[in-house]
Length: 144
Length: 144
Length: 144
Image (cartoon, rainbow over all chains, first blue to last red; front, side, top):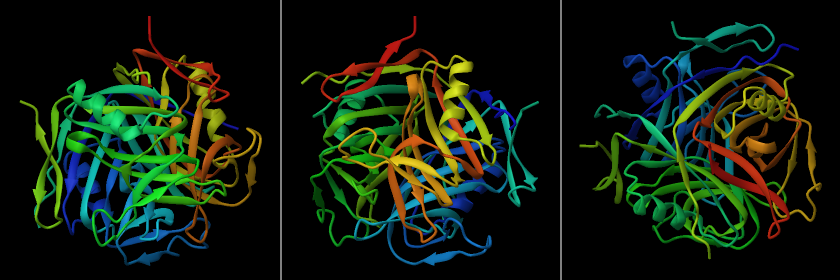
């Protein structure tokens, strides 16, 4: 098996509060694109949403998604924002139970979303098709 | 809709192991205040608690909270620590199931809590009342 | 009660995409050891696994673990990587429900794992036996 290929970098952070009605994933991807962030990732996110489109684990197709329409707390948001992004989320429901999966989008802010994005200032996060998975997978390169 | 307003910054980190019986939220807020951290947030937290006071999503009032009294694993802790803080948590129970929500406090350490706090050295995290939400919401400013 | 002892530091980050079949915990610990990272911790991790060995909260013994064998989404991974590491995880299942606990290992990558590790460049993460807990607990020291 190939040896994992790590790359190291310095870091700068970008912070935001998103307001009611804003969509989280597209807001972050737009900011990254407009500001030429090349290797951005989520460092923390606390907030609430009124809806979410999620793909649960082990689905038969990439578009086997679920639309949730309820007020939920964002209790974890992890992942990277380069080249379309790859985010997973943990949402808390009104009974304290939890829904988790791949965040497709439609993460409409209920009251707030306080987010810190890290940017690896020496790296580029590309995505390259991986025939083993059928997806464009993260391809980390040094910035030139 | 208003455009999201991001602010960027350099970062410094502050690390701690909290010991049995210590309360996590007040320990972090006290440290931030005593050391004049102005834009602190959670980068990672791993540990266990014997209790927690949580507000689940979509509650009718801000004091609709639940007191949990059991040994639980901290499996996610996200949020910011400025001006009172805003933390959400995912707690794992003895059967592997999960409780999630807004961490009010009372997070008493069982064995340990290993925590890394990030401090945005160029920013200030204030809170300003937002009539749309009824809460003091994060207000990110450049440090002068 | 003792006052919590924080230590501050600058930060450098190390990024990787792990490939199908790689084991996450040992890959991270090996990288940290081979590259002399002395105070490493998880900043974000998004990906999927085909299996995992987890210890749920409040187990009678340290080897009361559960072997999961199914495709799951990594929706939170928190903790530190020094001196053996201490990781907790939130895994999403095919029905959107969630399993959480202490990640013993056996985290075999299904499609990908995109991970950012932070390294506190001014600190050392040791572990020292704590008779109160029966475990080697995080002991944070300044680097000399």
